[in-house]
Length: 212
Image 1: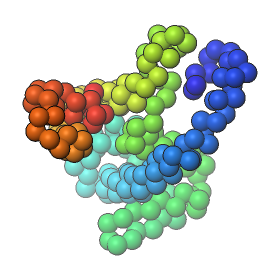
Image 2: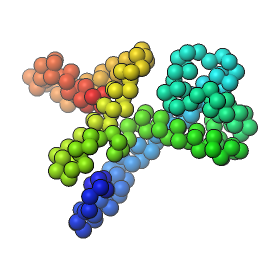
Image 3: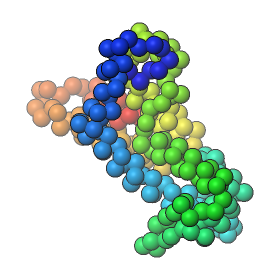
């Protein structure tokens, strides 16, 4: 329904218009909005804090690589820090709020918001057209794989990018995601006779976790 590359008959077009309403009724839209707002607050704080440390010359290699993955170089980090000093806030000692409405440089503001939005979409997986293989543009394949869009997006945004980072935090995150998914999977099977082999449980946990 989200494929706009092909002309839709009247019935499909009508159903497509009901998708946003369905997301509101089933609570997914509200839940996604809450999680994205929470993640956005933490991510903007991390970007601002690392930018300030880079501008002050106290940044470490890990934080520098973290900013570089988001597309922030030293020049841009200094500009973020400069704008934050003009209008930003710091709460509870460690939470940095950008307050971009008070920034004076429109281009730096635009870049910060774009980087923040991209990082939030990576943290809270939001499948987009670029996350799906080209063959899914075909109506037939789009229908067959319509429930695999999230898995494909998660593979691209979490697994593929994480494997390139070689970061212990990524490995810890993957282990946590799989462990939680394993618990969820086990909660559906309360009887011992209903549980599949351990290898099958691990496969189901990896698939349910969104790692791959």
